[in-house]
Image 1: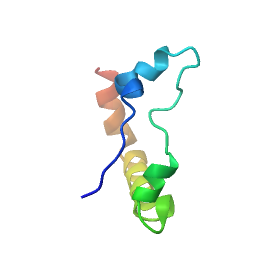
Image 2: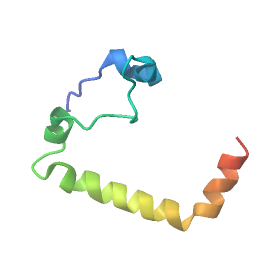
Image 3: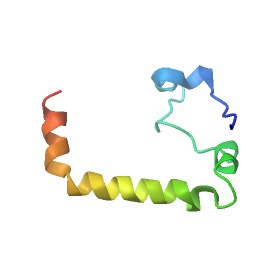
Image 4: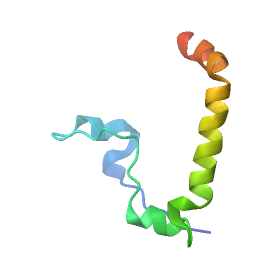
Amino acid sequence: GECVHVDLNCLFNKGETFDCPERVPFRLTHNLVDAMGLLGYEGVYRRSCEVTLRLMRSQCDSLLTYVWNI
């Protein structure tokens, strides 16, 4: 198993309420990149993001149906 640090001060969108608000859903810190192994974000993480984005683009109409109904 791996141990991942969670910044409880920014959990559950609390970072949006700071004097200098967080604008991203998460920060890809050096610790997270190191936990991804030798290739860092150029390995499995990047490939997974590419596949997910490609799938979302190919199913755009279906996804928008859910978004508009929320």
